[in-house]
Structure formats: structure tokens, C-alpha cells
Length: 379
Image (spheres, rainbow, N blue to C red):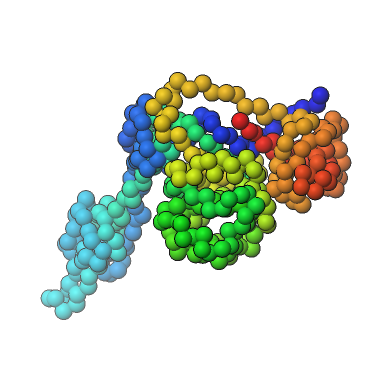
């Protein structure tokens, strides 16, 4: 039987999960190997140097740079406050006076009597990295971060937007076909919840969810236009996940009204009320990144070092279930009926390796490039 190996979209009830938590620059790691951490624990910290403000003081005062020292009110290393006078100049027996004020709060980094410049640096910005999931520190990356290992449910969506969020999982509907449109469903929602719907969510429901303090939304399908309105721009091919929006989205199936896959919905429903960590970061092209849903099992974290990992097959073969990741069948679930061995011509006149797949909800059989389908990994 023909088969191939491809990246898979994971829907795993119980699995070992590793999250690398790294600072963007060197800093201090605050936890040790084998430490048990909670999702909101700070595991690493660094100080991001503040921006500088270069003041051409001698030029502003119309004096020789060497004369600047007579009028300085601060020296190198001194702290300054925004609006504080740092240079006071007077001439002609005090008839003409000029002042130079600081535009920031920080320190005097340098004073040059050769150029007449004063360089101020704004206070550094503290950067903290949290564990993101409850787990155990499996490895420490010196001055950079840690690898946190946990055990629980792991689900990848097909598309997402928004930053990492941690909250309480709140499943608002009874089955995977139900829409999030009835505003009264929000009566059982609390601030900080990550809510789950079935097939669709309306723009009005999103707006009301934000008002209630919801931090994350997991749903089968969503209109592309709704996302555009939320973001204020069209979504391109760049990596998502850094959007400054109040709520993070994880779309499990695709755009439009699409029932959430039954296994995905059942796993989420069984985890109703549990702590959940989600990320909307997505990249479809090279270096694939998928939005994530992680539900750790607290009672098993302390014994996680003894849990045996089960290898998962990523074999693309006849009979395997896949999700299509390109239009016109984006998000559709299909089954492979044949792996065509010889390179196959496509409309661009290129020849690529393809598979014959059967779209489950319509029964339609199509030939599709293997690069545009992903196996659904289940365990």
C-alpha cells in the first residue's frame, strides 16, 4: 500500500506536551530543573534596554562643546525625570537664559565635551515569561528560558489570531453543530473564561463576549469578514499570534459555518470547567505553526516524569483521515482513497505528488496536492 509522511493536525486526548518558554534576549531563569510550575508562574525575566534620546546640547545653546560642562546640572549616571531641567545656560550677566529639559525618565548615559551631545536612556522595560501550562521544568536553557513538560489534552486548530491566554474552559453549547448567536448563553460566563461553541460565532456574540471579559473563543468556523472587522485589516500570509486584541480565537475547522469535529468537541466538553491555555499563533506556509489548545491534568503532573510517551503515526496512506488546508476545500475533512504515485499535472502546469480524497460531508472525490492536506493525528 502506498504511503507518505506529512505533518499532522493533532487532536490528542492524553499526551505528553512540551513547551519551550524563552526570553527574546539574555536574562535570568527563575526556576530549577524538576521544579513544578503553574501556568501563570514567572519562569524567566529580563530587562529590555530603553530607547535613547540624543540631545545636541552645545548646538542648541550656540556654545563651544567644551563650554557645556559649565552649565550641566547632571553628570553621567545620574537619574533624570521627564521634564526635569538638565542644562541651564545664561549669558550677558544673566540677561539671556536657556534651559534644556529631559524628554524621558531614565539615566544620563553619556556626556561628550567633544561633540556637545548628551545621551539619555529611558528606564529598561521588564520582560517576563510565564510557564503558560501547569507542568514540570524538564530542562533549563541558561540565561534564556526553560522547557516545561506537561500531560493532558492537546488540540491544534486550523487557524487562529491573538496572543497566549489562560482561563477556565466554558463549553456553552450541547453539541458540535450549535452556533454562538444567542446572547443569553453569556449569562453563564465569567470574566477570564475561554468559551467553546460548535459551528459558528456571530460578530455580535463576539462583541458581547468581550464586554463580559471573555479572553478566548474556540469554535468550528468563523466568517473571514468578522475577523477582518475585529482586527481592522485583511489577514495575509504572515504569522499571526501577536495581534493586540482582547480575545484570542482558535478556529478548529475553517471559515464559514462548519461543525466542529466530533472528537474535538467531545474532548473539550469533557474538560468543561478545567484550566486551559490557548495560543492563536498560526503560520500556514513553510515552518508550519498551528493554534493550540492545552488542557493539563493537574493530578498527574507530579508523576509526569514516569509517564511513557506513545509514538504517533504521521503516515499518509489510503484510509487515513485528513484536513484540507487550501481553497476551495479549506477546512474540509476527507479520507484518502488513493495515493497517486506519479507526479500529477496541476493548473499551474507544474507536476506535483497528489492524493485522491473523498470530502466527507459531500461525498465528492477530488485530486489534491499532498502538500495541501494534513493528516489528523488522534490518540
